[in-house]
Length: 245
View 1 (cartoon, helix red, strand yellow):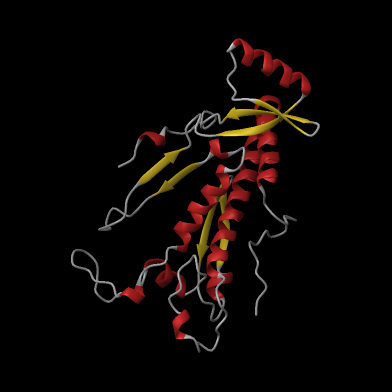
View 2 (spheres, rainbow, N blue to C red):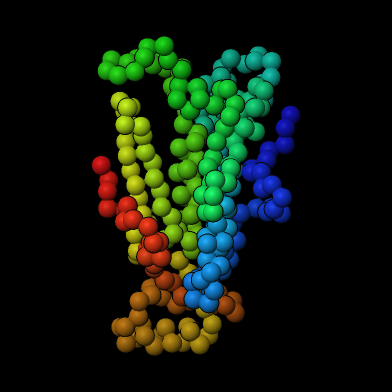
């Protein structure tokens, strides 16, 4: 039996990634934007690295199914990602790794032999029209689903407005779709910690009807202001979010 390892952080001492830890990185990014722009690429790299580790963790969760090295339970062979894919050699489960390509650029990959057949299914019927895939040979797209779960996790953080998603297919493929998404401004709101002075000023603006937030509350001794996300305005690349074929 293997101990479940959500991700492989390498030499970094990361124990768990939570919305609170991502919020800390987001605060660091905001500080860099105003006080130390030269450190901004490193701060963004820290955020993307944590997103990649969450992606790896979600993929491993779906690959951590029943352990059956002798293949004595054929009924477990075609379990779905939500059920946990059966482990035989465990190469597939432990094979989900991330690699740093460049600054703020990471990829998730799996080099095991079975990874391709799990992700895309097993079929001898070819591709194109009239293709028939046996019911027990369906694709189980762990990589795609792990990305979607990573986006769901990011929605719970204060850094979701910095997320861009690019799902693409080869121009030679017969199926699939192309989708490029930018998190829009005002798409969601989160409670952010504030000082008592900031909270009083926000209450005054709410009373006058000139506030851009959506409420003020007090949790224990901590004041919080609900603000809408700021969108992808800090991204300096091409405006990809306008295309959705």
